[in-house]
Amino acid sequence: MRKISYREALKEALREEMRRDPRVFLLGEDIAQFGGSYKVTQGLLDEFGPERVRNTPISEAAIVGAAVGAALTGMRPVAELMYVDFSGIAMDQIANQAAKNRYMFGGKARVPMVLRTQGGTGRSSGAQHAQSLEAWFIHIPGLKVVMPATPYDAKGLLKSAIRDDNPVIFIEHKLLYPETGEVPEEEYLVPLGVADVKRPGEDVTVVAHSRMVHLALRAADRLAAEGISCEVVDPRTLDPLDAPAILRSVEKTSRLVILQEAVAQCSFASEVAAVVAEEALDCLDAPIRRVTALDTPMPFSPKLERFVVPSEERLIAAVREVCA
Image (cartoon, rainbow, N blue to C red; front, top):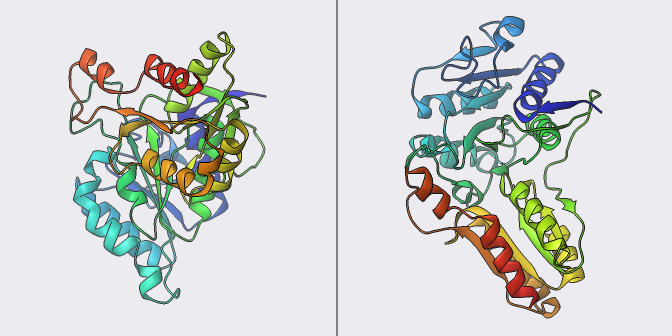
């Protein structure tokens, strides 16, 4: 099977959905001629023209507000925010408009829009450009939240998100764009709300999403040399959460470590821990452990940034602890 990058997989998803459905269009800052900050939309202007690949003013509230309005009138917009950190400026449109309209109009109004953005660390972007804010959106009823880890998942999930009749927050990790992986040339979808076991194992379940999946897989290779078998579960969609898949894994391994790049308090890891504690406490042979970023704004210094975010060593130490 051919291999393409995470960036190319996203672009293919956009191109295929725009060809399939004339209601799909793109909007965001510098996404047309420039191709977006991470070049995901590069070249799409040439094929689809300025009516369907639209540059916008530097106003996140306007971008999301325009997408909400277009979705309510029957279009399927894919809006792009350069950084998830800027979503706070558009939070009224996201939380009070996009997420609420379908409920407030008794299901008669639909908001089939995707808000693409990127987050995470690794480029020394500083405290205002390197956050992991997925928990903000998970907390809002009416939104779906997707964070793909591989090119295959990125393409299949983005196509599903565009076809969904609800607002979807689609968060890409800035370090994953050049990563390559196998992606079929034929049509396929990855359904929202379905987790994937990235590595089967017997001794401990590691739940990880986005870039942390790759860190978990590397750590699992090292732990295998010690005789510890890790099962790595990637939820892929954080909301709706495939809780049954996580519970099945924990029932098999009896131990759980949750790995995420965000801080621990009121986070996705906290939600997974609560679900397992409520539904599968009797299955556990050790306390649940969370491996997360430290509770501090993200440092600009590369060395300090690496110190704050989870490392393979911290994950390995947590796995050894629960398996002792």
